Length: 315
Ligand code: SF4
Ligand code: SF4
Ligand code: SF4
Image (tube, rainbow, N blue to C red):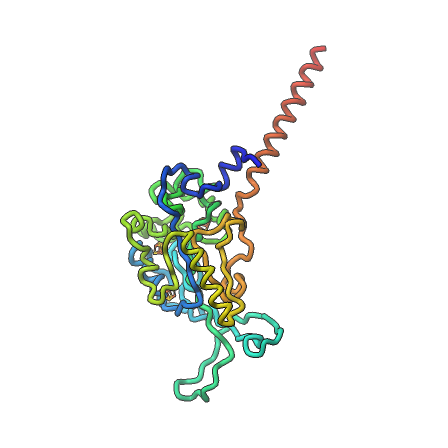
């Protein structure tokens, strides 16, 4: 089926987001594969991101109360967020029984060191380092009226701080709740400006690995060419399934999903909702081509009716 102007304007085509954005002979699309099964929750990635990008501190010392997490969610001053999810181990994991999959995010209790009877406690920790997905069809970018959000030659999505006018249109457009205007006193860097992960655009330009991936001691965050990362991720899922981890699955790796596939995708050990991720994210601009077509047809219809009325009145 041929693609209209509107389809081209609001969705990445078969060639990839960078060529669609007008880059000629761009390098291979870059991205992240975050394998949450080997994240140890050290938060080195969060710290490295803040350090490299000069992101102001937020909630460094305060625990949330509902978890051992301290930063809570992605936001204008948290471009990487490591979620800590304390989850009861399901009975099925032990006995193969079909069992209730309810998730309790409450605080677990621990024995003091030395007091334990050696039995493993009935919960597990899920840890996942979340980030901007650098969507193939990035609604934040599509709705930005100033061009502050742009597609880089690496296929990533970056905000230009000095062009953003702080209108905030991008904030509700993001299906993951990633991008946010920075709040704070006037002296805070980039206050009022939309902020999010740049996939370390400056480092990529210098041939370097993003700071968060470089700092991760377990290689939970893997950076590289997206095609190669997808192959590696498929292999890892197969390996986990063969080891009996039946719940391992990829999130954001499907180019046919509601955002055309993510540039930053994940291996999860449970449903996306457990990690606070939408199960079926949709770019809020997906319906725009159809809406514009309908608006165009309606306008043509009105013009035709007005023309007919005019001609009729002259008879
Ligand atoms: S995750 Fe949100 S902020 Fe990041 S590129 Fe996609 S729409 Fe934009
Ligand atoms: S890629 Fe760079 S900007 Fe993005 S989360 Fe990692 S360190 Fe932060
Ligand atoms: S640095 Fe790696 S292991 Fe540590 S919290 Fe981040 S993703 Fe997890």
